Length: 386
Ligand SMILES: Cc1cc2nc3c(=O)[nH]c(=O)nc-3n(C[C@H](O)[C@H](O)[C@H](O)COP(=O)(O)OP(=O)(O)OC[C@H]3O[C@@H](n4cnc5c(N)ncnc54)[C@H](O)[C@@H]3O)c2cc1C
Image 1: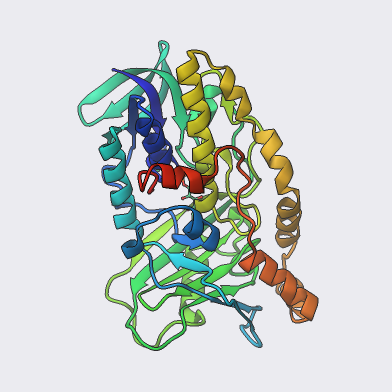
Image 2: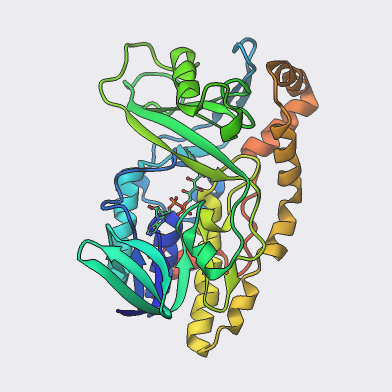
């Protein structure tokens, strides 16, 4: 089999990159090991305001806007409530959102091979193991959109993620009511060492989750989630939900990798480490980096040589993450409930609240250069819809 570009992994990064390239007339094969994009979801699906402003996400697949964040210390006493004057977050209905993105990709001409695992390089091509047996694909370029533990990164000899959190959450429907849609965050290293435990209740669904450094959970990730779930703040009253969806996965928080492209291909999304080291948000970065990836691959395919891929430079972009990497380092140091309580003493002061507002409600997003996503979105009149 041949293709101009083989994209490995149909998460948001792979779907978006594949769609943009197909829109520009290239022959794109997108291989995804999951048999259906609606299963084994690895994200809460919180989209931040900047993403909602810049990318035409399907309105009917987004939950109600969230403007309130409540931050809790260990023990949950005296939380700090922050309200924004703007709509800050919306939670995507991820299963249909991925399905819609797959339809958009197919409509653009992407060949989507589900249930098809990329087993690595072989004989000058790439080996795919699919429902009809193994196939060798010859592609001019390969895109590693295969997540935090990217095999493509290894096979292309590019950088790989070393600093990872692991996260797990439960998702279930909640009764409608007059509750204010709220994002509850608990800073407690015994539940979420190095990160946060969270409850998001947007009035339609609740997401209850924890994430942290795998080797620091006192009794493992699953037990931490069960402990948190038993006393989680902000859940509507009522018994255990009848149906619970479980999600989880690794989250790279070491910042954008330096070497994310070479003459045979490049990395996007989690594979490239394109996740905010502080907030662990990766949906906005994966969409923005995919735009840059599609630009340089389009240039390279048109030029008939790989030189434009030299512009796909993780080291240059990484420099703009210094502040967030420093804050990640700080959060990683909060190792005891006493340290978390001390952090809350600062958070309750006016400068502490102002700093928290900047992180949670700020205008910064992933600093990808190149064509602005807004321009791309309007040019393609909805084609960029992930
Ligand atoms: C529990 C959790 C909650 C999160 N919540 C949020 C949030 O609310 N907001 C936010 O902004 N970010 C969040 N993140 C981070 C965000 O979800 C990711 O950064 C983003 O989804 C990355 O997209 P991706 O396409 O790069 O990777 P993925 O979505 O992981 O997609 C990679 C794809 O590659 C496929 N694949 C892997 N290997 C192969 C192979 N060899 N062959 C074929 N296919 C392969 C996988 O099956 C997968 O479909 C969360 C992460 C976790 C773990």
